[in-house]
Image (cartoon, rainbow, N blue to C red; front, side):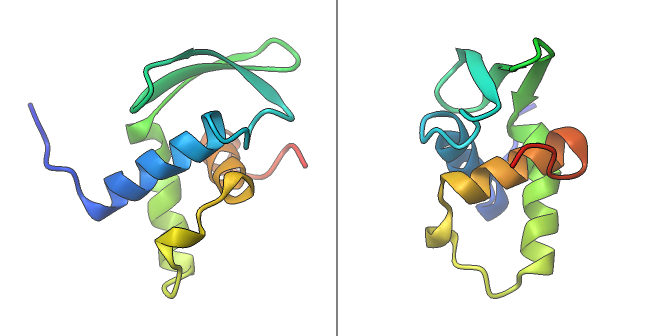
Length: 96
């Protein structure tokens, strides 16, 4: 099944790019595999592996948008992307 790309999907892709290629998660994880667009395997500094993809991050992005209705998507940076990835994986910010 192919689904249409929504604004949330586009923003989520940007979050993934900033987190992975922009170095947002580099302080607590390394990227083991990355398809350049939708999915990655990341490994925490302690060795725990996580499969992470667009679908996994979408709920955290939607939640962030709901809490920040005036958010400008142009404001996505590595720090915000890191927070969204951590919220998606852990339900809170674990690594500062």
